Length: 152
Image (cartoon, rainbow, N blue to C red; front, side, top):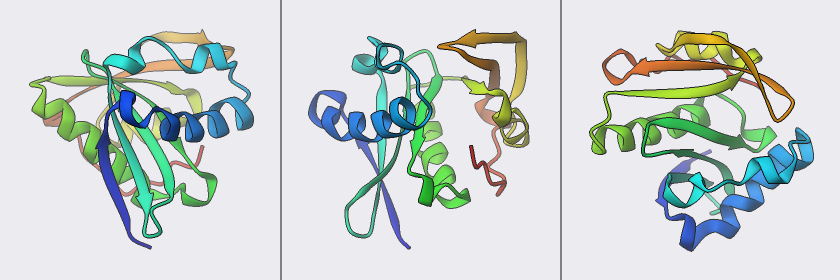
């Protein structure tokens, strides 16, 4: 299947981004909606992955400070190809913005995956919206995109 990644603006595509994130985070993972959507959405750069039928299958964002987050992928598309497209697009945005490093606040199940991409753990595990998370950072020069499947 062929996928396309689009850089999108929150103001113009909010309804599409919300649809995927509500389905994944609020309905499937049971994250309270008030935690899912925040003020950072307005200032962040967002990407949207669509399939060959122009159906939205994934999204993610990067804030001006380099925090990658809100990675939401429809279950049937959770595989290396879609994750790689998302990360390539988000890292490209970071480079265009002149950032030297990025960070991610990942669920504990994702720590190994992100370590294989060049991220390193920073600080202690913490709770966020009832989910244990680990802050991880990666210098853009150290980022590698290994074909490791992250199936969370």
